[in-house]
Amino acid sequence: MADQAPAMSFDAQRSAQIVADSFSGTPDERLREILTSLVRHVHAFVKDVGLTVEEWEQGIRFLTETGQKCTDTRQEFILLSDVLGVSMLVETLANPAGGGLTESTVEGPFHVVASPPRRLGDTIDERGSGEPCLVTGRVMDEDGRPVAGASVDVWQADADGFYDVQRPGEVPDRNLRGLFTADGDGRFWFRSIVPRYYPIPTDGPVGRLLKITGRHPYRAAHIHLQVRAPGIRTLTTHLFVAGSPYLDSDAVFGVKESLVHDFATVDDPARAAEHGLPNPFRWVDFPITVRRSGAPAGSDARQGPA
Image 1 (cartoon, rainbow, N blue to C red):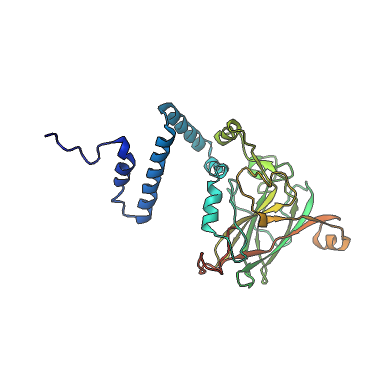
Image 2: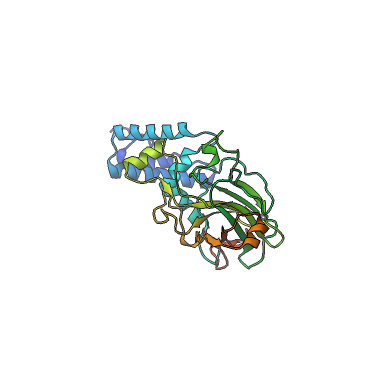
């Protein structure tokens, strides 16, 4: 009678179970759950598409090149996650919508340098190019209470559709970035320029992926905001410009209807002078509602994805 095959002997039919079982002794229960599910889904994918050795090798090369493209100021893996919709899915599941909370969206691949601290009312545009605008807002919790002293980190592309880290030596360091502290009433305001739609970087493997699949690389015009404060859940969100191209086909699936706002034209010399802006200027108000960190994500009082 033949000896019984070792428990770890490979078998294509049982491949996922065999590999999943190898993680059964993982001390971290959550890590064991993630790895086991990953193995099951990856093995099912390979079998579903009948992946060839050549295709597998091509995929390995693609991932290797993705890692090689990463630098201190560029994160190609985040870009890959973005264009596959994974980043938005993770954000949305982590911040379920409801209760009037500001919806979340992706951080993106350009939040790679610290924003300079600025005073309320300062401009984040150090080049003087683009259409001047005033951005105002107020940070409140789900009960309508102001979040005094909230940190509001903002960053955006310039009038040509580039971030500062994409044009080192050509634009001032940390241009169009700012870290503001809301006042005692949770209010914040700063000067900037109306953001422009722009293409995500296409000179790497993610760009090639978009090209061979017939997808465009453009993002709708937006300003990034990240809000932090003791006792609240950090919120990463976007302020999209109403009427911008690509609102219905954003390359990273980041648009949510509640985040699209009008940048109105204001013709008021006195108000322009008050804020140090030319007249007329553009203005947008973006109220932000955040969830207290103790509020359960599934309760009626909770907020949704920002």
